[in-house]
Amino acid sequence: MILMMLGAQGTGKGTVAGILSTELGIPQVSTGDIFRKNISEGTALGIEANKYISKGDLVPDEITVPMLESRLKEEDAKNGAILDGFPRTIEQAQKLDEMLNKMGKRVDLVVNLVTPKEEIIDRMLTRRVCTNQECKTTYNTKLHPPKVEGICDKCGAPLKQREDDSDPEAIKRRLDIYEEKTSPLVNFYEEKGILQTETVSTAVNRMGADVARDLVEKLK
Ligand code: ADP
Ligand code: ZN
Image (cartoon, rainbow, N blue to C red; front, top):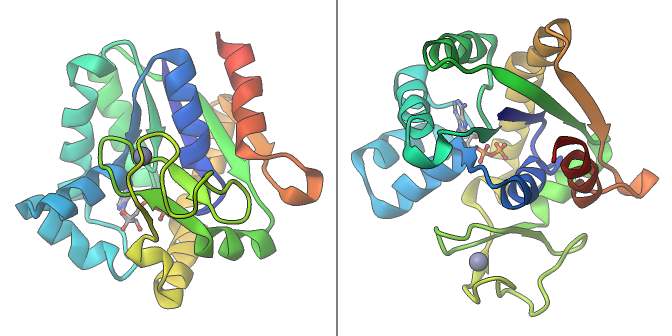
């Protein structure tokens, strides 16, 4: 089963994907996480990708698409995956269709998370991630803080703020790119009849964990 998370930055894609991965037993495939792992390990891919990521720009397809393809071919993804952060353009979505086709697979469900604009920036500024690359759990200092400040509940590693989350210019750039390049994917998948839109907002008291719980119930 191939699931896909769609939605702007800070809507909780990673949180929902993480819960679905644990509950359904299929890996979360986050292109952002793979890039960050490469950056922290200083690989050639990481050094190249960071030129774009630090500014809030998209990493070129020549780097991103083959990286995603080889990840989907790994053993643990043979029964499916939860895509988080890919595709981000119509072009990437078309390339994804082609590659899944060759593997005899298709996208089964696209979960589109929507959060009011005024909540989004706040959620990005208060986001913290676990520095342990095997864990990478995301927290939020206001909405779901760790039990001990600055420490991951799951593995005890220190938490930090992502560099691109602490730079207002990079945040604005990422949100603009989402509007322009990624949001057309909502229609793209709606027309295929596989889109499920969910609101995540403190205003209606519905968080990522609630969405994830309902999805697990539906999919299990
Ligand atoms: P966010 O959704 O908060 O921007 P991600 O972890 O999904 O965070 O991505 C971080 C950065 O990695 C993006 O700003 C972009 O530079 C790069 N990136 C991630 N996925 C893709 C993709 N599918 N195509 C191009 N660049 C990507
Ligand atoms: Zn951790």
